[in-house]
Image (cartoon, rainbow, N blue to C red):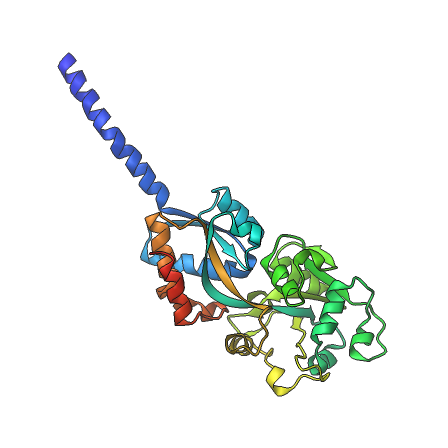
Length: 314
């Protein structure tokens, strides 16, 4: 009897490492992704498609802003951050690695209820006018900007969370997110909703929150402020590319839309990734996964930039 007990004990002992290895393997099959609203729709699309090929891999994807994604990765609460801006010098010292995965843009928006919509489309706003509206903190009327008698003040909305979209929009004017003066709203969807509801408002959003990618049309309630790049107080043919998702994406791709506020979007990891499942997913995103980029409302990266990202995984 004692001999049998010893045999059982030995068998259990030998099985323990297998159990822990199995647990570790199961854990590695779960990938947590957190961060920028800008990349969230494409991130979800990628995970859905990847799961069809690898049903044993589980994903937890959440949007909370680029800043939250970075915090989560550094705290090891997430494996990958969705990131939508350049790193600050302080952040660069934290040992994170950026992988460019797609291109997007931040676009100035206004409410579709605005009675001056036709005039806004014809004249647009210049860089300096937009800078004054978003950074001066002054009461600026729509009439002043559009040379009309409309005395309604422009209501400015910005992001309340640490957002790559806000930082990128501010970078267009040489500033940072905390320099923008306006009412802070959480998240891309919330900001779009606030602008849509306020007749005389202005804000900014990433492309996927301005256009319904399935139809190519602007989302209900939201419209786009064209940027008068040559300051001639009218939107010329080569500046008029806001009518559909396809036209704005083409302008982002060929550089007609300025950069910033056009920007690369990133996956970010704490150090060079070592987990085989995370590496496999990143490689797939940068290769086969690129076929889903344009259909999701983003601009695919050129081949040389893709290769540079893949080289980081070697």
